[in-house]
Amino acid sequence: MRRILTVLMLGTLLWAPPDTSVARQTAKSLSRQALQECEFGRQAKERAVRLAHFQKGQALAERAVALDERYADAHFALFCSMGEQLRIDGEGIGSVFGARKVMGALDRTLELDPKHLDALTCKGTLLVRLPGLLGGDPQKGEEILQQVIKKDRKAVSARLTLARLYAERGDHEAAIRLAARALKIAKANRYKGLIPEAQATLAELRQART
Image 1: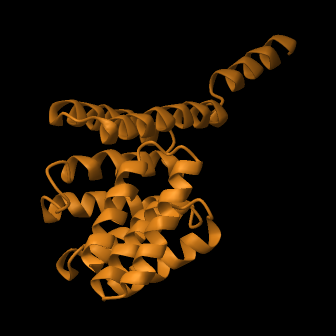
Image 2: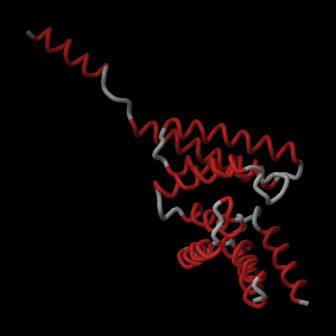
Image 3: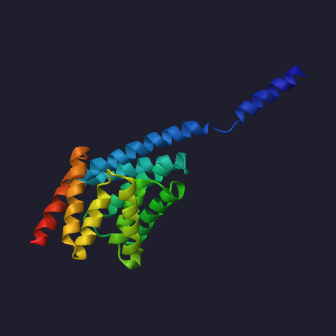
């Protein structure tokens, strides 16, 4: 009888489900690496180098999603790498199919974590920038970005997008104030990847005002 019980216990151990905490930690590590590759790509100057970083980031993110499909940052890392590949030659979205895949990764991030501030920033920005054919909705996008800057005092990208939107409407003073604030935040927090964008945006807005 004892031998039978021992065999049954061993069988239970052999058929035990995998440790989900290990999968989550691995997915977390891969997602972090993928987002780092996305940032490296943004900072790189040469197109080939940028593309290589984004492609590596996508591969890492896909592995993270495969390990833990319910880990929000894995989907956000996938969104980052795929989105940057689509716009590597400019701000325009390269194709309807590609845009849908990118938005799918972003929407999945927010399904899993509705308070994901980086994802909310990207969602708002895309809604502001994309044409209606690709799901754009400037009013909804503005509302989301306003929520982001209320919740995150260090938000830079959300402020820059709103600044450009205000400038398009002719409210140059509000646009300049937002861009100046974004630049100050970027410098104070040493956001190296965002400082040049904030500087360029502020300079463009000031020039447009004159």
